[in-house]
Length: 397
Image (tube, rainbow, N blue to C red; front, top):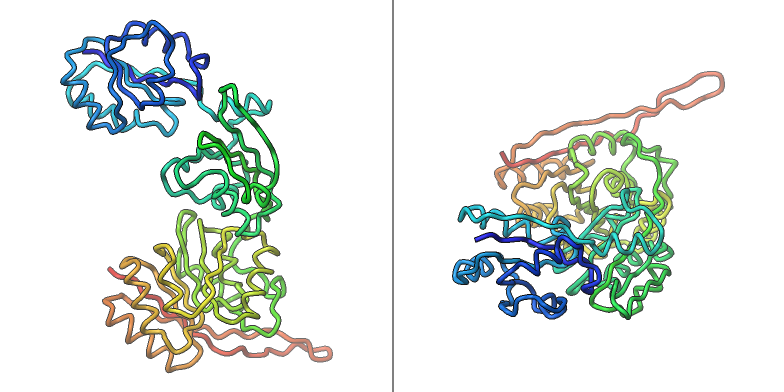
C-alpha cells in the first residue's frame, strides 16, 4: 500500500495543485473530512470514507485492501494539519507514504491583499485555545486560522477587552469560494459582527514600547494615592520570580500595577488581582501607558478571585488582605510547581509567609532589602531611608 497525504488548498477544486490532482486521479481509495470528499473534481474514485481522527484513518486504510490511497487535508499539510499526527502511525506500520503540500488560506489571503506573509505570527484557533493578545504583542502582524468557538468575533473580543479595540484587523471569509469576502475594520467593530465558519483573521501588530531591563523608574507610573512597589524592590522581586517569555503570571494585590506591568513586558500573560476601585482605574491607565496589552484585570478579593484564572507559572503577592495562608494554598492548588514571591513590610506577614510556605512543602528564601535615597539639602546630599522590605520566595523542590 502507498498512502499520499494531500493538501487540497483553502477551498474549491480550482485551488488544487497539479501534483495533488494527479495523485487523486491515481488513487483507488480516499479518506478525509466529508466536506473535502464532497468537493473533488470529476473522475476520482468513488471509494471514499469520511474520517478525521488518525487512529480511525489508519484502521480504515488497513481494512481497505487498497493499493494507492489518498488522505485528504484542507489547506497545507504542513500548516496546523492532521498530517502531523498521522505520519508516525503510518510509519509504525511501515506503510510507504508521501506528503503533498497545498495552498493554505494564509497564502491566499496574503496574495489577495498583496502583502508578504513571511513575517506574520501564524496561529491556529481552530478548535483549540488561542491567546490573540499574546500573538499581536510580538511586534508582527498575527494571522489566525479560526473555527469552533474561536471565530473572528471571539478573537476580536479578546483584543478589544485588552484595550486594543482600535487595532486594525482584516477578515477573509470563504476564501477561494464564489462567495469569498475580504473586509478590514477594527477589533472593536468586528467584535460585534458575525462571520462565516470558514474565516481567517489578520490582526496588525499591537503598538508596544521597546523592551528594557526590569526596574522602571517609579515616576514613570501613574500612582494616585494607591501603594506601589518601588523600583529597587520591584526589580529584585522580578529576579526572584524568574518569569520567562512563555510564562503566565499572577500579581495578587496589584495596586497601581507596577509589578504587573513589568511582568507583562517580559511574559506571555499577567493577571492582576485587585479589589480597590481606584487601584483598578490606575491599573487600566498604566496598562495603556506602557502598552502592556497582555495584562488582564481580575476584579475582586483573593483567594476567591483566583478561581477563574489560568494556571500560573509565577506569582507575586504584594497584598493579601489578611488572607495570605488561603491565597498561597490556592496558588499551589492551581499549580504545585508555581514560583512564588511574597512582599512583606510587617514582621507578622514575614512570619505567616514562612510558616505557610514551609507547611506547603516549599523551599523558602528570605531577602531583606533596605534602600536609602539621596536627597539634596542646600549644598549637601543626605540619605533618606525607605522602609525595609522582606521578599519571601517559595519553590517546591
